Image (cartoon, rainbow, N blue to C red; front, side, top):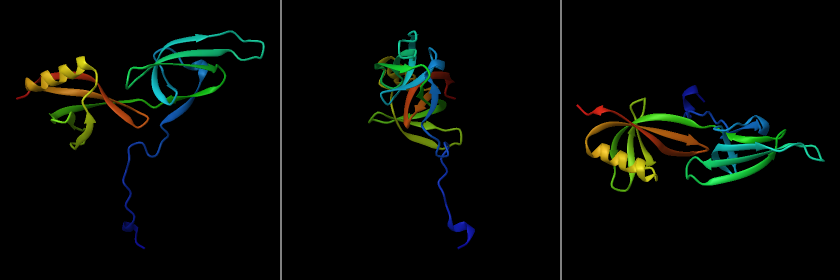
Amino acid sequence: MSDDDHHFESKADAGASKTFPQQAGTIRKNGYIVIKGRPCKVVEVSTSKTGKHGHAKCHFVGIDIFNGKKLEDIVPSSHNCDAPHVNRTDYQLIDISEDGFVSLLTESGNTKDDLRLPTDDNLLTQIKDGFAEGKDLVVTVMSAMGEEQICALKDIGPKN
């Protein structure tokens, strides 16, 4: 067997885990935590005092970063809980298809065609109106735990 028989598809995350352990007592407001298997942004943290059996507890209230649902969890502050790896990437918008998918230009010059338009009505109308007016738009895509969604929009001026 020669060396060129092996061909591996390269993935950016190199097989890394979708989450990492973080001690519950160190997670703060505006941080990220996994509650009920969903990546959430922490909007409220309260810590109860140590009880008769020893553990102080952290009460987390989080908003799911993809669907906006409010989730809660209570974890002993000394225990580890999962925190998601959250990445934000900017892509230039090339096209919007009839079935609600967007075509985006990556840094490397390739296209990314597997993302749907966002469900947030305000952001959705901004993207559609800006695209209809022929503006150059850059969308910010947030990805965590194998999910991706457009979360922000920047206007970089009219197309030439």
